[in-house]
Length: 360
Image (cartoon, rainbow, N blue to C red):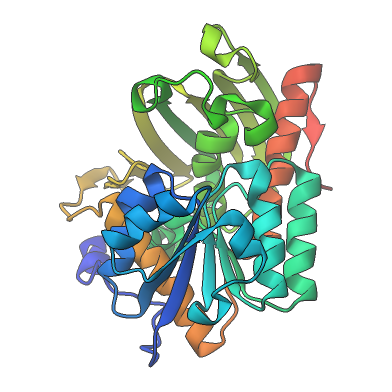
């Protein structure tokens, strides 16, 4: 079989129903990701628009309203009070992890659809409460796994489904970046365990290879063993400046992963089976390329990779398409809980030095 045929229409939105209408978003949390990536992504979409910006101060929110297509600036308190709720249909939550639940609770009570950044919350307990409140109010909830809608990843999943790997055997993943070059502040929330949750590297970076492997293989992890250490003074409040973990997935597929918030940027995911190999390299930082090996032949497919802004547009359009058409969302709250359960087990294993069961 000529596997290049899989990629003739790389950018096809195989999930699209071409619905009529648009979804109006309130963006909660105006960090650099929201302002530099999400806002431009929504402005380039035909079925999404930003109408409300929510921040700690109305002045900050208003500054971004003045420079964007949004109409309304709100403080967090005003959002919780339900002010201007008639001007938006859905809420994107991009605050520090430990505050996601608060805003999802308000959005759910207002009957708004929600996209919440990954990981869903700072702990398994709070993430479970988040899912419960969304389900009790019967609102659409999606966790923002942008790799799910990256066309390269979706085509790789089709290859796995078609048997390109044969039987999956093992997975290698890595994801690292120099956090202090992105933000030199030692008091930032990703280095504050009260705001970030179990740690920083596994929560913020390790979740990418973990979740993308789940998506590609359609399998979930069963047990974890891990080691982690923090050596730089900026990481004194979190245990995992550097972390490594091994997961056993369903059908005894093994995954080995490394991650660090204080290493050279390096993002890769490799799946090896009895018959073939699929490698995403680079993988997770807005540049995703595909390399295939099977039957003694290797190829690197020349494709235009999406930058993070286009990845986010795909993600939001997937969400809007499903909200407008009333279809269920794959990366829902129950899906997100599996990652939190695995991350909790990874940290417990690193503390205890033992293998930790994720589920039976």
